[in-house]
Image (tube, rainbow, N blue to C red; front, side, top):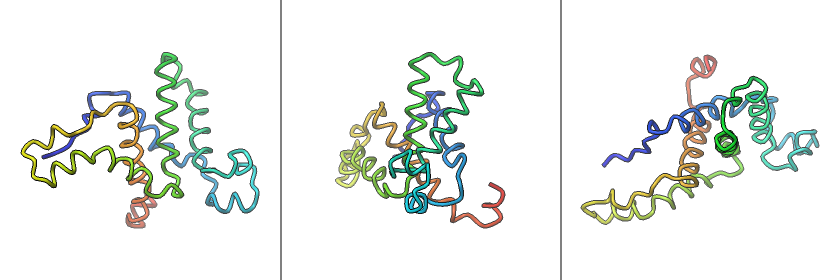
Length: 161
């Protein structure tokens, strides 16, 4: 059985995850959160030592998108959804959170996994509906896995990116 999120049914989701992936390291300063916190950098102070770089990436990206009028024609509701989704995805790339996204997604799929492992003839009946929080957790995990997996690329591919 193949599980699909049917993301292609919602162009907003595709747009949002693409923007988040594109900007997840926007304006990176070349050091890690630990360094910024230990040196009492202004960013660490601004974000109270929590997910310093990730908050910085999200904030700067959303400001840029507003300045360049990317969000100009979005309704208030859509702009709010966009900002919330993009910032959540970017914040999920904070390595301190470790398995948080994976644990949430595993919990979401728990009934389905139990049905599959128990040889249920119709495990698909136990799939969750991908609404709001559930969808957000899956999107967070997708980008987090891509971010973590990037260093495994060859140096040539890494440089190209």
